[in-house]
Amino acid sequence: MRYRALSSLQRGGLAGAIALGILAGCDMPQPAAAPPRPAPPPADAAAPVPSQASQAVAAHFARQEASLLARGMLRTDGGGPDTPFTAAMLAENFVRIALFDEYTEVRGRLVSGPTPSSLRRWEAPVRMRLEFGASVAQATRQGDRRDVAGYTARLARLTGHPVSLLPAAAGPEQANFHILVLDEDERRTAEDRLRRLLPGIDATSVRIITDMPLGVSCLVMAFAPAGSHVYSRAVAIVRAELPDLSRLSCYHEELAQGLGLPNDSPRARPSLFNDNEEFALLTRHDELLLRILYDPRLRPGMREAEARPIVLRLAKELMPGEG
Image (cartoon, rainbow, N blue to C red; front, side, top):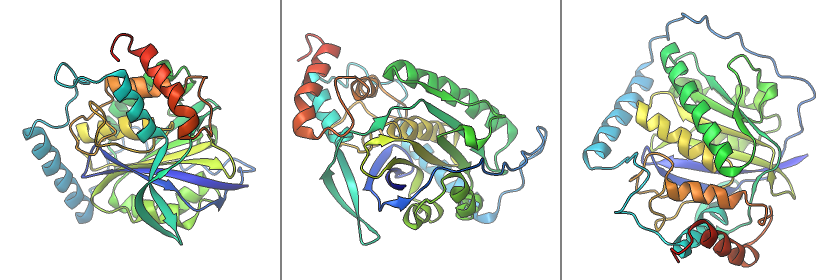
């Protein structure tokens, strides 16, 4: 079966998500048998000493987070009186974020430029699985697992769609949305692991992950069968070197984008889906975007002309009296 991928990246280290449009179709058959499971490290195993390259990455993102915080960025309040928005603004932001791609693939290369697209989302239950590289300490794994479990429950409530984090003991064959937390060395050598998790993944998608530049802190790719607008598998990559808030920001943005909000907009505020890095976590505005995305009055495959009047009506229902 031929598949296509949607990708988004966080740039500038944190909350500037860049959608990478539709990548080349790739032969991606469903695995006939469960892929081999690597033996997990003992619960009390200490993380290995990071390489010089990984230490340099960690230092870079630590400086970056500190600088953003000093400038009042990476807000965690979800927005307030200083970030008003109307139903009309919400509807316009939804159209730009859910119905446009920011990058398209031309002869194996990603080309920048907003491109009209169609509505995409999941129909099957989304079963997420966290997989940590050996570089990640046990305390970090436990804290991240708590954060992601709480966040997936929140996504399920907002969308009305089944979204859950699988238990730590679950095998990769049980998941359809893989979250890999890897350091620089682990990510650069992750091709074999990616091909086991996503049989038939195309070379462009693999290269985007293994060659991820320092300006990108995390990314997500969601896959749909060719000719379909319904996602069936996804993979998110999060740098293990990120400081705690930056890493949490990645979980918030990439998991939400992997549900069907691929683009960003400079006009979206308060929002994660804006590359100005003002907000670190999902906001009230973004919660409403997710509620619109999974409303049954919208259907996968809708283009802007068909979806826009429905989106505006939904926005007005969610924000009565706020025009």
